[in-house]
Image (cartoon, rainbow, N blue to C red; front, side, top):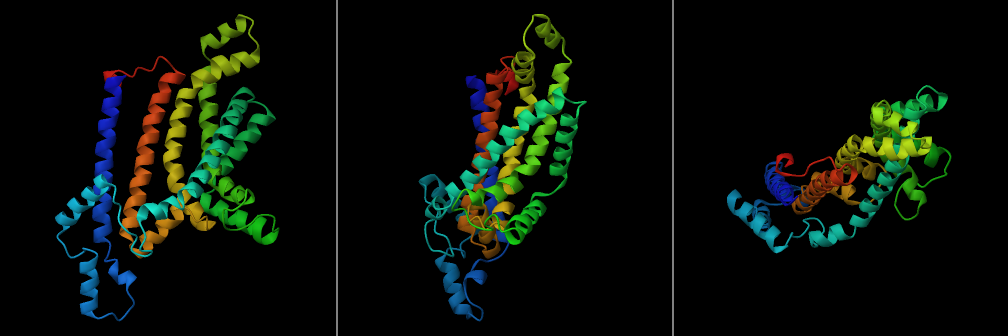
Length: 309
């Protein structure tokens, strides 16, 4: 276990270093932020003074070493637009994004796994066919298209739900529905396929021969053994879910981290953009490590020794 954790930690550090370096270089070669901060018609002397003030006239290697020194010291800089610490800007928005992701994950897992099991158990019935139909629809419709359709239907036409903001529970309905539809459909299909493979195994027939109830056979013997590929899908979905939230936050004016990163990209506010991408990268790396560790809790046959690292 220790060797496995050390190996995963080393890989995570290398991944973080590569992502941070790519983000640093990308923010420097996509344009000068001074051109977006300052008004049009600014004279060359004032422009040069502003470039020197933000340290953009220094050699790239000097900026790179200063960038890492600031990260190690916990100094993430000031947002170029708001002139406030980047950490403060993020702290004001992090709960909005986190609450949206948690609500979406709860809906996806809470509905996806039971529906996938139902579609496998009743695969030749109306229930299984209806579940698959909705799964294919959710899989086929892009989340931003579904978000716009929900806005037009439930906000502008019926006026049942608010179109923007995150103040009440009603504000969560459409963003969570739009964000979870694709992931819910994907999880249903993977759970169904995994359960179908498990239901044909010999130990399932043995469990029934012992006189166990069908509920115990399905949940204890079937679902537990089918969870390994399902957990893999959930881990992969978490990575995609974070990136998908950027689009949904923009459509619904959620005022979270995703919406802020879009604005920072358009304005070349590289301190905010760098910090945001690094936070997302850390979240993805930690989620993948957590998923790997959950394997051992679900299935003791999974080895976490040196060969698995």
